[in-house]
Amino acid sequence: MPSILFLGATGFIGGAVLAHLQKSFPNSTFMALVRNERAVNVVNKFINVDSALPKVATIVASLEDIERVADLAYEADMVINVADSDSVPLRDGLLRGLKRRYDNGKGVASFIHTSGAAIYWDGTQDGKFNDSGKVWTDEEADVRSLAEKMVHGPIDCSLLKAQEEGYMNAFIVCPSCAHGVSPVRRASVYFKSLIGDALQKKRVVYVGEGSNVTGMIHVNDLASLYGILVWNLLGAAGRLLSSSPYGRYIIASAENRVPYKTVATRLAQELYKHGRIDDPEPASVSSGEAGPLLQVITAQNAIVNPKQAYALGWTPTHPTLAETFADDVMVALEAA
Image (cartoon, rainbow, N blue to C red; front, top):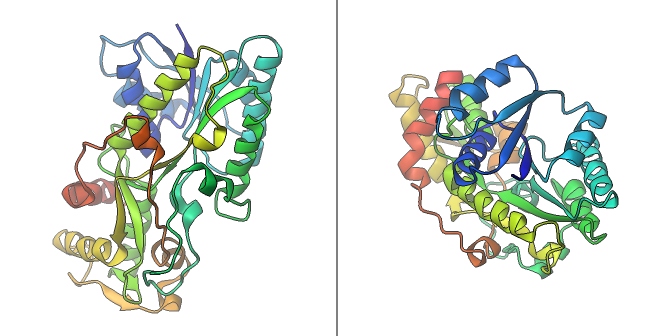
């Protein structure tokens, strides 16, 4: 039975991915690294709910305990990180464990790392769609042009380079903004950020004309993509995949050009309906008025055209952002 070490089990994305993998690979052994007993209870309450499936075992340890992380990575047949996209010490610990595994004759290691489509942000600050902006794909030529100066770039570029040493097969997943209700009943970082700002301001705002775009993906469509990636890695059975590491960098997006004003308009309607803001219409503001948070996450473009996931046989089947929006807001408000 292959063993899978999972980091990020209690997160919005991680919980959905782990629940999907537990059902899809019942002959695998899952070990979830969690930070405390409260997180253990979350796994048992929301993930270990089907008595017909093997339980996910929990290991209480800190992601900052790098030597422990390295040892756990060494022991596992596969490591999946949905916990931290940008930690250099965590990266180093995981790679050290995976390399030691290979050096000790345990075969080519398997690793899935979760990055994010923020790597494709174009630096726009005026909330305007850039007609001449680059459309990023996950084809090899575009992946090779990623740079360390980009958001998530230091980790992603180093993981791509590390695979050239031949000791690990890895996929790097770059999700667009995820939506939908996760099994762990937590809101996405995206919705928590937008709603937190709106509740503080008592209104929803967007920058400029709000025509800037980003991608969206339902969290359960994202989980199904991880299932395909796990299947491919297990199929390698400790041998080096013939595909290029630069062909295993996956953009995960189902709706690729959602204008931020569309999001802001629906958000204002939902929050007004719940009596949490004073105006059902969003307001256009300057970049400076929006504040640093919204300037970063809502005024830029991330224009993507995913290829690799579809080539692997993935097809999004879950509801769109418009269809899940009311539930997304409700879950975020529960924790607000």
